[in-house]
Image 1 (cartoon, rainbow, N blue to C red):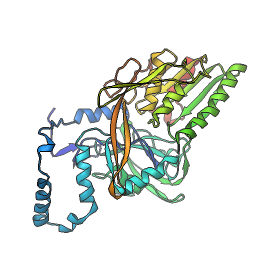
Image 2 (image 1 turned 180 degrees about the horizontal axis):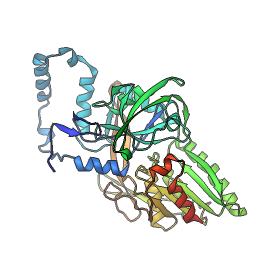
Image 3 (image 1 turned 90 degrees about the horizontal axis):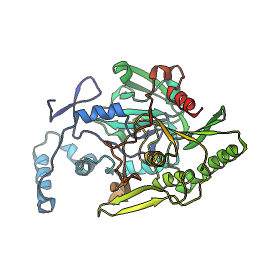
Length: 420
């Protein structure tokens, strides 16, 4: 394949200049939209277009006078000198350094982005109610939340947002796009989207923003003695709050299983971008024998830290089916991988995203923050979870978008059939 160094084919119908190939900014909810992991088809699209950059030299031997030399030449010659006095130039230079690591979760957040990131952890906000990703310089819908303004307006998973209120999203950061999409409840925003399942046909969809509260855990239904529990994310304001919510659901299912009103459990982890790693261990602890290894953490020094379950399981015997897809990432994959390894559940759906790294958020000067990958997660077989080593379902079932548009979830139908 011919590679181009100055332009890349985006999801738009034109060429756009790009400074990097792919950026995935965190897996948090952000003012009515969320940021998550991309689907497998989109991921493959990006991988096909990637340009390999081989680093060279020892940075410790470089003189940072080169940085100021370049800046001074820009100051002396650039046609628009006002642009050289902006925060965007300063923060952009730092972002470029961090992004050159080609490790998507390692990212620099400006003071504004850091403030929005902190505010977004509660799961309650005003906006359209959708989880977004940034793939190949394009903003992609991972999934609209159930009952959200985005879902009611017709936004679908994998839709590519090319314009917000007729303003192009090309060459903008995901934070910039999010700030344009968010707004007060009751106000209107028009999104121009390109739909992959329709050969990227363009649609303009108007959405009335609303107050969105996305539950992290909920019992969706009990049908034919099969309980369906949707876990949308492994985060809340605090880890203890998430555990409290899970405990309520777990006790409920355990009681129903004992009295015979529930005989099987379907855990829906589709579009779950992860969150607290510890939440995956807590969840596994309700299904696996105490002391079962859920994952290993490999740090930069090469040592492996073991993470076993620490409690007696409340749901040790109930048959389990787990639903996953290409947007199931991080903690949701770790939990699923452990359940599959110990043959504690049947996994159905599509292969997962493959995010097996852990990040720490480090405050830096100016109110900014640095999100840094500090370790890798290994599954119980000590295989590293990554895009080349994802969770492969026991039964592959791809989502039928035509049926979904008619209100039929063919993946869930297959999961319920398997449970019976």
